[in-house]
Image (cartoon, rainbow, N blue to C red; front, top):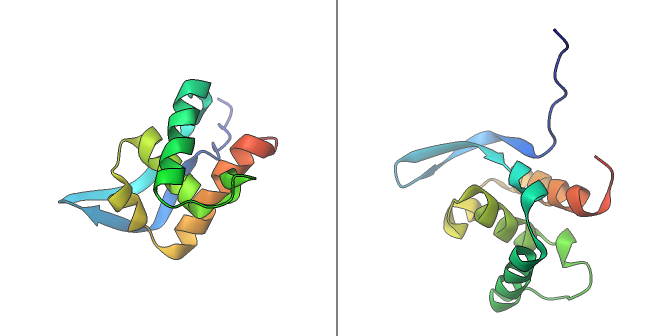
Length: 103
């Protein structure tokens, strides 16, 4: 049996986050592959209403990645904000990688 390659869209948190009695240990961003342009427009609009700046390359911003993670995983944005800084930067980099770099 061949060993499966790790999916870069499955982010195991180095420090779990507690949100309303639920422990979040991993963010599964693999639903990004199914996201439509219509859903992406909703994310762009939410990014702007949340105070996101810079219409160029917003995919490289932490706030954009946090909004994407919230939409894809179903966790509220407030829970995503609680993720530690190191994991947050990893999240941002993986979202950016999905949109702009080869897997």
